[in-house]
Picture 1 (cartoon, helix red, strand yellow):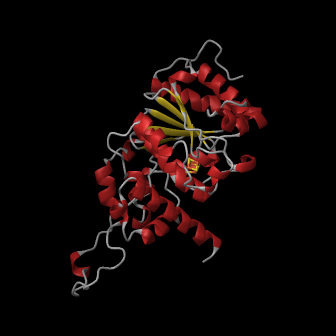
Picture 2 (picture 1 turned 135 degrees about the vertical axis):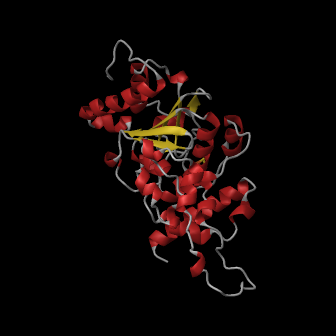
Picture 3 (picture 1 turned 120 degrees about the horizontal axis):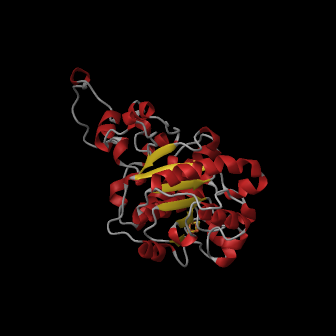
Length: 309
Ligand code: SF4
């Protein structure tokens, strides 16, 4: 098995382990092959792409540009994605005595479609803290950085993972990048306590490296549960890691930054990470345009001091 396949296998194992934790194990029996096939494919970013997606990627969260053509119901979209077998092509063979390992359409198996009934941030926090060891990031962390803010926020910011300051203080976005994010929130006429802020992974990657695929696979289900529990109007991905994770795409963030996507009942937009803005201040203008789009959706007016510092 090469390293790429090994990574995908780890990811599939992490999903399955998480499903077991939720008591969903039987639902996922015999589906390992499906995860591998689906994970190979980047997600199409248009309604046309979603409508013509091959069955192998049908289970992935389909980011759909907010055009009129994209507003078909989920049921219609899923029906269109399922493989259609003309009656005359149905093989006239007897059913095998032992069912094949994979027997169901892929569109029914994604954890992205799984929701925990009556979930809450408190329950998720209990599930994850204080001693989660689902991935190797637990070894070097000081503490789990769960998330902070209004549990009923209309706007959620999602970063990639805690840095040194966050690891020490137990709160996301509290270092220099956090100060800039706070300023950006203020420019939107909001306060930190009005929004919710969290990361894809809850433990600090050593040396502030990017989270690895197996770590994202292990931790991102908690992020999905957080988003479902908060049920915001808008999710703003800060940087490529969170955007790629939630949109399940390998495309660079510059390809879709500032565009709207549908995501589990919310509108999702991706913009640059504040840490990137510290290195590239010229990009602040682009981010401010993105934030203005968010403000328009939320009905916000810019604060008097309307530019990020
Ligand atoms: Fe658990 Fe997430 Fe920390 Fe990994 S990063 S140990 S999955 S809380």
